[in-house]
Image 1 (cartoon, rainbow, N blue to C red):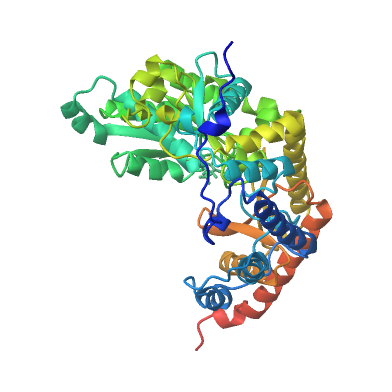
Image 2 (image 1 turned 60 degrees about the horizontal axis):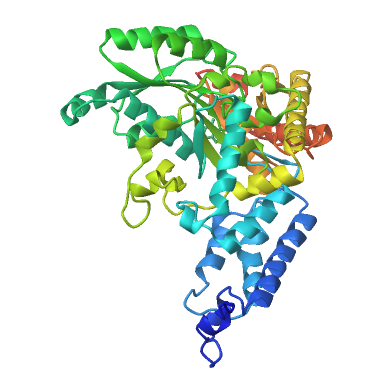
Length: 514
Ligand SMILES: *Cc1c(COP(=O)(O)O)cnc(C)c1O
């Protein structure tokens, strides 16, 4: 009879002396109570701030906060969690910009769902790194399931794959790297040097600037991004894409990818994906769909059809931290053909040696531009497991409905002009009662936006359209009501009107005197 192995005897005993002071701050089996208390204390501070917020921000200026931050001596610790939280409240929490507030209407920042916050707390405490199986185990499998789930929602087919990234900027860079390598497939090093400056990317004037950045990082020519002008509907026309592909080819250039946008950052418009996919298929060009904003439609119970054609993409960017109500960071790049991911693979002997592929060990670093990588997927996982996809989609539907209401309000209001109606949750408009000179309107809108932020009552975004200053609502909070929107419009009209009143040049004075 064999005796059970006495594992306790084999385990090295811990030193009998107590932990050092520094070790008391490490998270381990002896400090779980400190961990619970510290995290609960931090959660409590945030909860209090969110509960008490009367506006999305306090309008604090850099010159007010800077002295407070500068005065802190980082080499003299407070040695007390409560004191550190008190200090943090002064330099950060009190004046932070709260996207949870219904009058935060500015950028593509969403309020976040509680299951994802729970995920965030778990993932940073366990601190898995998703580069290799031996640093993550189940984390790798969870990420893979979510990639498969997202690819399934898009309809990319059985060979699809992808990986989580830090954001849409990285997802776009990653996709365009793969597209560049596909375009250069089989080229010798000499060929590559000749071909690289001849590569082009076609996108629209409403596409995201990260495409330009990616082109720069990918070593392409300064004029590598061919920008197609959009019509008044702010969508890229398939005919224009076809035209540009032809023009590039006649000039001896190679189009490595067309980037269509499903949810432009400024207008929330969706390019005609199916028509553009048709052009890309017939001309054999890689289609990347930047759905950083529009990806929420993948779970929308009523609007999924707006993404029709996305299933024909070669690669897709999704930002769960834009329209899935996830905390930053949470994004992914998806590809139709998993083999293309090999262009980001590098085998390091210490990490993911080539033999691990033969041994079928799932090492996500083989697919990623990053090495050490957060387990961001856990946030989406818990969101889906607690709420389910329909509930997330309903939230996104609500903000799209709210933006449509805001558009109606603006269209009926003689104080304002409103641009293109968004498919998503963006409204671009400006204060300009009839007869207001364009330059004065520009200045008045800029002024109103700044005053609004300084008051802390609301935050709206601004943008330039055809050289003129406009204001922008990006509605991502289902708690924002039509009354909130109407209130903010009144505030804008008040600030802009007062500015215009004091700065208007009386017509008589503009005539040359004498
Ligand atoms: C926000 C956005 C990006 C960039 O995503 P980040 O997560 O901010 O890096 C790219 N494309 C579009 C259309 C976006 O709206």
